[in-house]
Length: 202
Image (cartoon, rainbow, N blue to C red; front, side, top):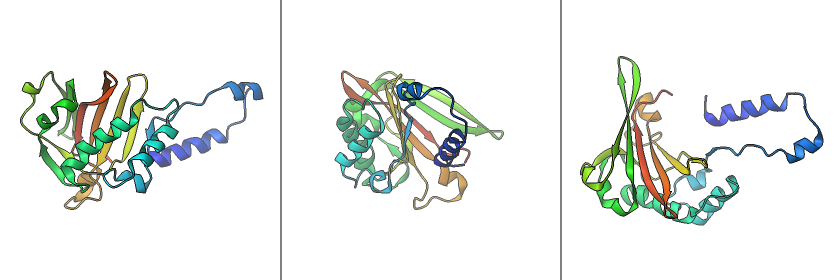
């Protein structure tokens, strides 16, 4: 079931429950902020979308709003659009060392692999540019499927899907994606993690 549909069903189930508590309690209670932001079609291709409209959508979704969201938007555009030119290019060997000034160390690299029908996640940590391989293979494209913000961890995750891309075939290819993780350092958002997932369970 799609995440959006699950959210709709969960909201419908809550709405059907009898009201408990006073009206005053309802006024003082603050609802939990949704973690995920699913962008409308006109903003999902961040290479072609209006960056200010994207920033406004993010600011409206999270209250209080994220710090330096304009700088984060520029950073994501450079990682995805400079490499892909707004098109989904598939799995490419990306020269992360070329983005040295935009990386926060330690950089976490998470990989998924299937062994005997089970998905296994392994994590590597790179503590400097000298430890990075010359190029790392992950999916690259200009579309963002979802943005997740973890206020407690001060982390933004941007998921770039493979679905609907040229050359993608089969369920695994349609569900594959890459998540880029960003954390702040000295007030700036920097890339802190990459998680390519070749064959997630759909």
